[in-house]
Image 1 (cartoon, rainbow, N blue to C red):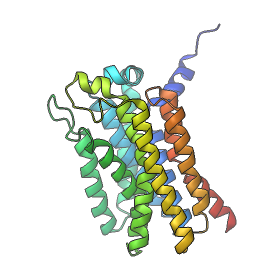
Image 2 (image 1 turned 90 degrees about the horizontal axis):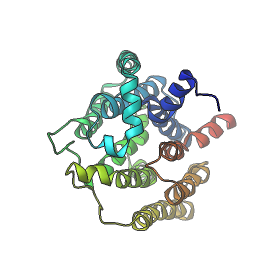
Image 3 (image 1 turned 45 degrees about the vertical axis):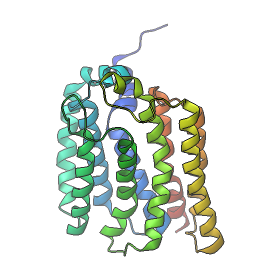
Image 4 (image 1 turned 60 degrees about the vertical axis):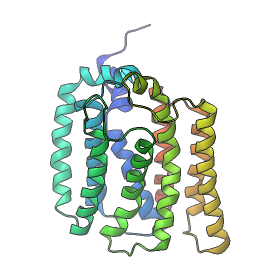
Length: 284
């Protein structure tokens, strides 16, 4: 067997551990909202979303990597330590590009971004030995909420659309879609969290219990889709978008988020809304 070339080792690690692919998931959620609700794509908002999410995850995984990651995610810690120069250059580019996009956005959108960014900082900002300010059950709930609000409401705010009952239902639907991935990922980190006295949520739960809870959340989201078809006027591609719920169910029961490959696959399921968005644009 030939040794792995340094470049291929870097690329493999970047796919699993670099923050930019996570920013790509944010772009997929934003584009999914544009495609599903028929809102014109706002390029500066999409780019700002990619940069902002990538910067938050760069701070969390690289510049403020918590001590528990040495136990929970040793592969990621090793890759980050080996590529600090790369991450520094990447961070500078993300700051410059994201900042350039922000000046093109409406002030109301900027206010929403400040609020969402503040909630994200609750997770990233260190708080002594207790780790971040988000701990226990609040951590996956709030993080999933930030993802859902940013991915569903920001496009509507930037486009000047009203945030009525239907957009709020769509927000809940997205939150229920995203939350199972975060519940499983956070639960899989319980060993390192407990070692650092972080009081992880559901530390005494079996994996089947966590998977069961995640499945209930996905079922509620699917039930909501069914009710929209029965009593409302669904977006044309809502059924295609709802396939993501089935895919997330498969990820919940078949993937192990503590493994980098499986964590990436689960994140790709979160990016499923890009598929109906692409279909929507092909139909134009």
